[in-house]
Length: 452
Image (cartoon, rainbow, N blue to C red; front, side, top):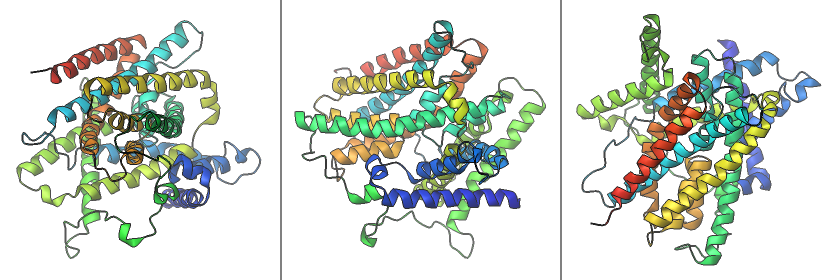
């Protein structure tokens, strides 16, 4: 137990180092690289993969244990997703069509990225003579739309399936997440400047005016520091933060029990599910029951989000710090092909649908926010949208946030489905499956936007 505590102390040190570097180095500020990624890179440098060959700074055993942390930390992160979520769209809510269309576009992007990943696997193994493991390809969507934290999800899923290359897949997902994060911001800023010059942006006049607090990574002015949430519990009973963490971990623990029971009795299908998948399913039922009992007030979505962000930060720094460089370099050619195709197809898909179905309804702002999320994380989309719409006067943020929430709920299940199909059949099967879903959702978008 003491050793586990030491690991978190080390990861905390890396996070502080990353925060300081982000605040001081303009290069990282201009690229908006998160402190967790910077700290992870610092850990990678001083770890056994690089400086460890010359001087033993960090024990090699630490690296192996740190590599397992993202798979553990992602369980409460994904389990917490349904908590506090509004599962339905209210009838009186305005612009329901915009929300549904945004959601469907994000779903199509998910299908597309998964399909492209497995297509690269099929082409490389069948025509280029590159030996890839069966599930290679899921890392594109896991890294791009999921981000560094979700890289632990794919590692955990493969580890639960007793596949020996789980750490390699986790490392490749971390690599694609880095490419996606940096590339998404660089490409996004380039596209914003280009659209601004062409007059395609609704409000933006000077894209160079990015707030300094976004660059440096801290908010010095106390008046501008936002609250992290409301206290729903009294300290005399239980700390609000502790209550939210206890609720998330209780459901995660229940999921462990269910998975153990299903595996013990060899129940078909259910015994093959990962803990995080059950965690999300169980939380849906728990939250639905809490709403039925009118207990929504005990959960504050901001606090829940901060807890999820807390675990994500540690998942990211541990994933980057334990990146298996040797294994990643072995697959560098298919990784580069996959990410390049991912960038091109994702942006073309988003901008095409936005121009067609959001004509005269802020198509570029909607496209750039969805692109940011599809290449990096939710914050990346908000960052790019804030450049175009500094005060969020446009209705884009609300539609985009709801669409993202629904995609975040289903996305992990789709990744697991792709992995299962590639293992049971071949890499071409998930390509055909996700291609079929793209066609279905394309018709659904057309149906939603039909002229009445």
